[in-house]
Length: 207
Image 1 (tube, rainbow, N blue to C red):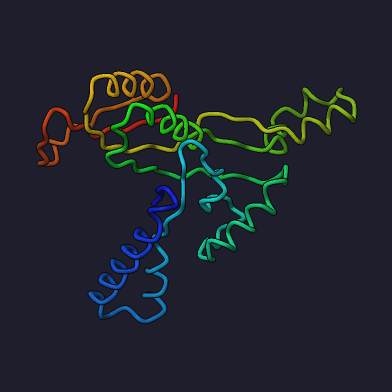
Image 2 (image 1 turned 120 degrees about the horizontal axis):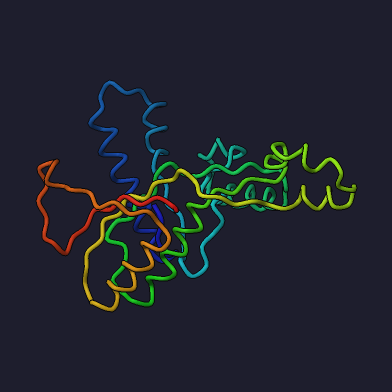
């Protein structure tokens, strides 16, 4: 769960309270399982104007043990950020709830989502598919290629709830959203959920 830094203390408190409630309702669970359950949800700062790298949320294979403290995670990410061979893994799903209503936040939000749904692989991985074409390259250019990164669309899906408010904000949001993502509006009536026409449930995937 992400928000601005000022909101994190309350978010952490709510997570702890919900984990305690969940654990107390599972009388058959032992202490170790309860401790693990409390680690299933975490919160982190994400400023759309200066979004942190995707590694900071623990999606790197080098950070599989992501149940360390936030400070430990930050130190680990800094130490890994200079590694050209670091494999990155995208989240399967990003949930965006009642995401934006101010016009000045539309572009930062969608740029952040675009960044987080772009699959980044190191050129050490990408060049394996192109070795036959690169055999004639000299050593210097070969070394430069190894340090570059390539980007492509990922399989990450965005599930978004959105409420239409002001016209200018909606027009900007709707136009830019469709320019970046393939967007499918979910018919919630199929699930017995009825909503006003200004509310949307959207499934988005990077073009």
